[in-house]
Image 1 (tube, helix red, strand yellow):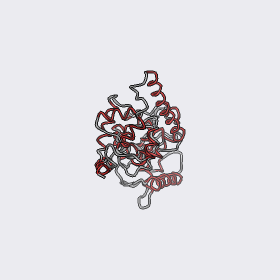
Image 2 (cartoon, helix red, strand yellow):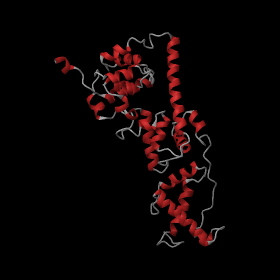
Image 3 (cartoon, one colour):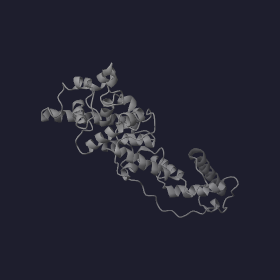
Image 4 (cartoon, one colour):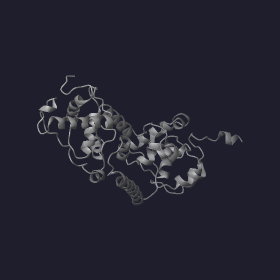
Length: 324
């Protein structure tokens, strides 16, 4: 009875895993750093660690999960731990920082030699196999997502890091960001870009890839080959004269035709994009420009903003040509 009371409980290092958890993960070819930490604490990574996040109460408070996850991620950065470490190698590394595993993990995994015990040829072969598994996973994501008409920002970030949006993001129980410092930074940049109107909430894949590259997060070459227009430079919008705010003065269409066209433009902008004609600088213009870019129509946000302001003059209660 005393031994049961002293045994580490779930959420603490050395927690005893369930039989299902042990059988499923002890045979995995590799663990990510976050998966390894979850297993040491007795959690199933597929259920608890969503989108590589360790900011959940169970992990952060009871077991110091966030602390251990940060140590693991730092070890990867300095080359002391592989991003795709075999279970035996992860157990060896975890012992060096005091992150203990239940004895049942050692019984299942230790009979297999760690990477330090294998010959250089065998170790290189296993690393190549892990790399091949990652590339195969990337190709699956490309096949499913490269030709989507649009991505959400969250989907784009997941795909940039070879994470499946379906299983890793949509099913996660909270909006907490991942433990990876790179992913945290990309999420922060994207949030600011959306707020400033520099990135659409649902950009075309090519537009998201180009934005990611502009902030220092380039996609793998396989994505550039598979996503239409991903390698095409952003077209520079040709300079155009500032149009008169009175549609009757525009050439090519009659006054009634021009007014009908402007009504169509402002109506779609308000109904489809929630455009606010009274806003000083609406982020909607960037979103519209991105969607047009995804269709191969090159209009910069300033051009979109200019025509929306002109079109807003045909709204009820605001006669054409009236001053603001």
